[in-house]
Image (cartoon, rainbow, N blue to C red; front, side):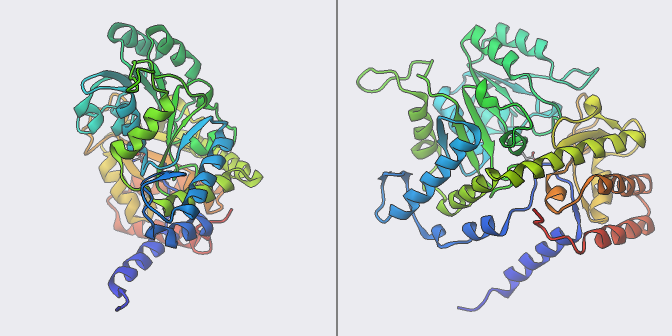
Length: 426
Ligand code: DSN
């Protein structure tokens, strides 16, 4: 077989792009060589529909052990009683929860996408908003924090079957206990999608939602620093409150509904090579060094947010408790859109994404905001002093976003700063 030079040349170009730039996309990270090796292993050759010990294919003795190892490590990491490591992504994990808990058209309540929520928490263009009746709560305009009173009012008025906490662009800790009280008042399931802060939670630096939520979902590739994928967890199994029964008339436990909702409900064969890589990442997250890494992620984010504020930018909610922040360009640069800002920064090898800010006056294609996160640059070994410098560089680009000369100068500085930094330094 001829070597695929064309394709491998593209991979090499992408490796070079990742190495020379400053990666500030809040949901991205760089994995270890071991995670990468597990993902690129012979396990990709194996079909294993079903679960360990109950497969529809022969030859699953080894992958059973791999999947069991991933399950045990994940349980240990978060203190979970139940886990499912097969979801191919966070959206797939969420879909499985909906499938297990709702019927088409049922109501659920999640954070508004344009206030930091996630596509799969009820956007009208996503399965969650198309197949189910999505209701939303917002953040407060005055302080950018979740409007728990509005959440409660909507929950009591509409009686959704699920209330979801969790976000894609929210920099503050959640009051999970308060949402659980609301869920209990109306008999709803409380689900937390912890995809963004999962690594900080694993390290004990943010509250563990498994203590409060009935069901928790996550991705494994953001702060958790594993392969691209999803998981579902429960602190404690419980009977399905909406009364789905077995053929014998017994009420099904949620663990059994969730397992069936992942396979065969919404997925076929599990990606055992990715599950192996998840096992490696969970093993890494159980090591003491992971906590040091997460502490640095948090310190870097706090330093970066303050540096932006010192330069006259508005950070939504005035700071961050986690790894990310949302910058509202309108205070300092009212004419500049998120789209133009992202383009200029990418040209300087600083990668970020445009983002709606709460109560945005622009469309999702333009936006007035930028989202920044520190997990990836922290994995490359950058610390607080580097954050101040990065904000200087970003400010220079934004102030002169039409100047090719300024962008070229900043790009040269970025490339010099990153040239000797391995992708994975911890
Ligand atoms: N798209 C991811 C993010 O960037 O937050 C969420 O799925």
